[in-house]
Every structure is written in C-alpha cells, then in structure tokens.
Length: 635
Image (cartoon, rainbow, N blue to C red; front, side, top):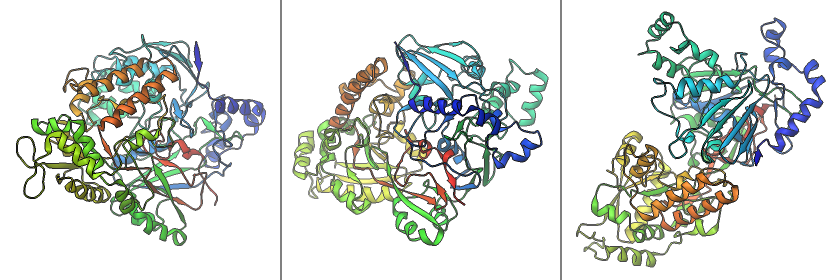
C-alpha cells in the first residue's frame, strides 16, 4: 500500500494558490528588487517565475506573520569555507523537516513510498533553476547515470544512503516531472538523508554541468576550459564546479532562496535572492522577503565582540554560552535581542572510551561495562550543570532530550546519579582494586591507572568541564591527563587507535523521531570516537577497519539492520527503543549535561524568528527549519 507523504501543509498551500490563481497570475506583487529587470524585459514576471504549484508556507501553524520585501541580513563567519553554512541555514531540500520534525515535500511536489522500497517523486511543474532553466527529471538522471554510475566520475561508488545491503536502486524516469527509485528491500534512511543539514544531493543542473563532461562537451573546447581553469583533468573540473553544499562557484545554478555572487577567495560573500525560488507566503507572494545575505569573514575570536557591537543581524555560530552576559548587556545599546536556544545535542560534552584503542590492557578496561559504568557514576553532573551552565542544563546520559518522542527517563538517568561508593565498587570489580601510596588505582599489569583524555582543544567550556571531571575521577582513584591537538590530528589519533578516551559533543540528533536513522547508536562510521575501526569496517563494507567483536556492539548493528528493513513506523520505533536502552545501559559514551543553551543574537528589526528554538545540526539545520526565507525587516 502506498503512503502519500504530501503534508497537509502542502495540500492547503496548493489550494490557497489555485483558489487565488487569477490574482496571483495577473496581479501578483512584483518584488521591488527585480522590478527594473522585469520592466526592462530581462526577467519574466513573478507569476511566470513561480512554479504552477509553489510551496505555500503555512504561517498559522508555524506562527509567522506576512512580511515586507527588502533588506540585507549580515552574518559573521570565521573562514571562507563557512560559505557552506549558508546552504545549511537556507534549507531548501527535495523533502525536508518542518518545525514539527516531520518530513514534508519541498522541492518535490509529492513523494509516494510503496513497501518502504519504492520511492516515486513528482516535481513542481514550472519550477526552474536560478538561471531560469527548467528543473526536471533530467537533473536526477544526470546525477545517477552521468556521475554516480560513470566509470570515471563514479569511482567513489554509490552514496552510502543509497545502498541497502550493499546494493543500489534501479532508477527510472517516468516523465519530465516524475521519476522513481526502487530497491529490493526497504530503505528508510533514504528520505531522512535527503532532508539532512548536509543532504544527499541526488540531482545536478544537467544543462550547466554537461559543458564540463566528456560525454557531452566538444573535446577541444573541454580541454581548453580545463587548461584555463588550471584543473588536472575534466573530472577534477567537473567535481569543482558541481558542489552543492559549498556554493563557491557563482555560475552554478541553484534552488536555494539566495545564490552566491562572489568568487573565492574573499572576506565578504554576497548572496542575492533567487528569482525562481519555489516558495511563497499564504498571500501568494514569492519568498524570500529579504534581498541579500552578506557573509563577512572575521577571526572567530572577535566574532562575539563584533556581534555585541551590532555588526551581525543573525548570529549563533562562534558564540559561546560564556559570551551571553556580555551579549545581553549590549542588547538595548546596539539594537538586538540575545536569545538562549536549547542545544539539541545528546550531551553538550561527552566522553568517548575508545573500544578500539591499541593498548591491550586499556582496551580490555574500556570494553568492561563495569569500568564504563564506574566512570559514569563517579561524575558529579549536577556540579557541572551549576558551575558551567548556571543550572540551565539537564544532567543526562548521552541520549534523547525530552523534546523527542523517543525520550524515556530510564535512558536519560542510566548510570548518571553521582554515587562515589558505587563507582568504587564497580571499579574494584573491573580489576582496579589495588592502589598505590597516593591512592591512585593500579591497572591489572601493576601500572598506575592514568587515563589520557584527548581533545580538539577548541573550547574553553570543554576545558572547564574536563577540569571538573578530572577532580571527580581522581576521587575515585583515577588519574586523568588532558591532551589537546588540532582537530585533524585529534581525529587521526582516534581513528588509528592511539587514543584511549576522547572528549567531544554527544549525539548530533537528540530530538529524533522513529523515522530518522539511529545510525549514531551503532558502529556505522569511522568518525564515531568510541569505535572508529568498527565504524570504518561497516562504512567501507569490510574493505578497511575491523569487524565489531563485542557482543553488545554487534547487537546494535543487528538492531540497526532491523531498522533498515522495517516496513512501518511502529517497527522502527521499537528498534529505536531497543537501541537506546542498550546504548545507555552499556554506557558506550559517557554523557554529562544536555539541553544546554546557545546564544542566538537577532536584530530587533528582524521578524519571524522564534524567541525559543532548538539550535543543532540535525534535524533543525541550525536555523533551517525555522525558514530564513520568511524572515523580514520591519524597517
């Protein structure tokens, strides 16, 4: 039986547009930014630029008000490659998460799913790329046939989220607006991957990219273009020019609300409104309201000060919780609001015992659940919350937050109650009963129980939390040292088994629903610091890394595979709970405090931004699900 994923919001939106069709098609309000171009015949009217069935944003359910056109949003970033954050924030996706964290068609007009393995997409008729060229099934065919399955461009293989038990789908173009992917088994990870903050891009602007493809371009002309661009070959040039996530190529057509006009290198990137953007407000007026986004590059150390002096209209990135008092102080003077949004991480700071560490003695210790539980109950989370987060956070394991329908107290409370007696008992049972004259426990080989926690050293907050944790663990007879290194080195050491324990943020998505992937709970990727070699083995299909050789870790993998093959939301929810229970009971990672706060600075002139929100990578894409295309200036 097919499941129609077109949301009530989308359906109501289409009705609104069609009922008001005469008004919109013949008397639509032209955007002042484009008025001269339309009058000069350089650009079609807004009614011709919108798709026949645009996405109508439901302002009532999203608690928004109609806005005015015009203005520039200023943002500050610390490096030029942060240009990719604009694509995260603006959040136009084939299918995306709404503020209720449920999936809704966006660039697609509808998505039909049959048996969890057959996905039929229908695009919006008349939808165009930012250069005015039609957005059609050809753009998806090009990606699948001329990129992924091309003998040269496709060397990296089919994207992981398009593989089910190592096999990709069949792809079929039905007509100009309709196409289908079919797998032999269900692929519940596919739609969430399309909706991600850094999504699975299954399309490219074929009309533009063909000029860089050997199968379509004239060889002499292509060789000339490659040479002029200083590229190694046509494949390198094609790869450079097609990037969707990091829009460094101003000539690349886009489907986002704003398009980059600045070539790197630069310290100021200007994004202008997309004349063919597919969304409209309830009155049928094309979005976005704001004309331009201006991203300026500054040292991350001065971004809080610049923000506090009113140099950014929308800022959260590179702001820390300890900046909040300073930012709050400047509100009235510099015309902004300093909000505190919840951080949607499973734990703001978490410890990751490396179950793949090279040291055989410490590896045995890290794999002993009594040791991990002992560490966890030796940590005084309430002290961390009060001292570092002023009591605004929630002591918790690294798990779901109450905003998630998957939340349960038993997961959040698992082995988190500060209990030094229990910690000592568990550590004794784990073989660390002997101590030296300083009260430091001895390892089974007679050496002192000294644990080095490795850090990327990017946060004073992390340093302060580690200082408290070091004191807590020393009370339990464990000597802790902290080693900081650059993030690349930090990760390489973890991946190679040189680290014993790491510190980093917890689960990326702690507000998940059953239809979102639980892959963070199983060894599915090398970046997972608690089991990087097992994760690498999984993501490379056994070509690198090591197979998981711990029963409870293998159990997580088996459960994850069950989620992948589940046919219903109920089955997926059951799997999620089994994985969360196992993950928190086994203390594969050691959480401290979640539901902490992120300063979000917003110009007092800017409207339609919630005072309270959830600031996290996934699934909110930071500002993405709050729809920056609906933000507007009241002056």
